[in-house]
Length: 267
Image 1 (spheres, rainbow, N blue to C red):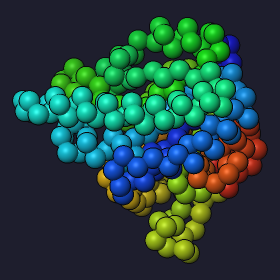
Image 2 (cartoon, rainbow, N blue to C red; image 1 turned 135 degrees about the vertical axis):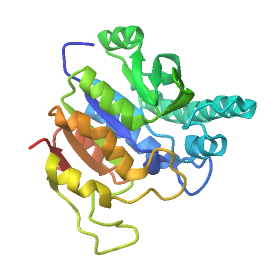
Image 3 (tube, rainbow, N blue to C red; image 1 turned 60 degrees about the horizontal axis):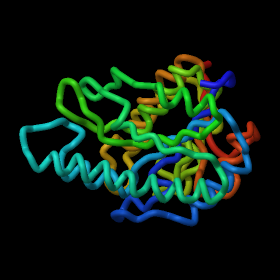
Image 4 (cartoon, rainbow, N blue to C red; image 1 turned 180 degrees about the vertical axis):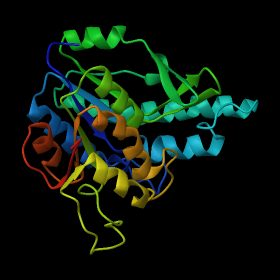
């Protein structure tokens, strides 16, 4: 990596797709986020995006997360899930490049292996060279080969936490379809209470109360996302969760300004 500690931006699938549909991208939001990323002008940014209505339905249909069950149709499902994720990734790459961000896509299936769904191997050779030359790497939730169960889903959230720990990230910014964390689903309950700041202890107490995502989500909704983030928070990485669907929230979070959302610190 270059000398600067990275900032990792996770763009949630719920923000850039309609998770109650199938292959339903929100192109206006994708374009605005690309504009905000360009405006932030960071040379130490790593982007990771989720699958939303692209990866999740296919992964569920073929039972990819739970591994290979000696069913040949799962191999087609593995290939299809990877393919639809490259389609969504292509839409994001189109927008980033159109906004003159020197972004390069890195498929996790080409450089990660897991064991019982957890990362055990990462070939970082290409990433390190891209970072040295000040490109902006773009990862995404993907299917990967698993050394115990054949294959599985590597979520964008596990990628974020892994990369943050490996490269001592300055901070993680999570862009979702809500303005941070709430004590109940703000889409269903207009009186849901937002959390502006949380420490690790408070976050762990809140985690069981966090709901599942709308639509199909093979990675466990918000509760699953927080579970993956906890190791990075335990290591002292600052996390900001904010609404990617609202203008300038991601720009402000990336550039260290106050945002409508939840700030999470270890203590």
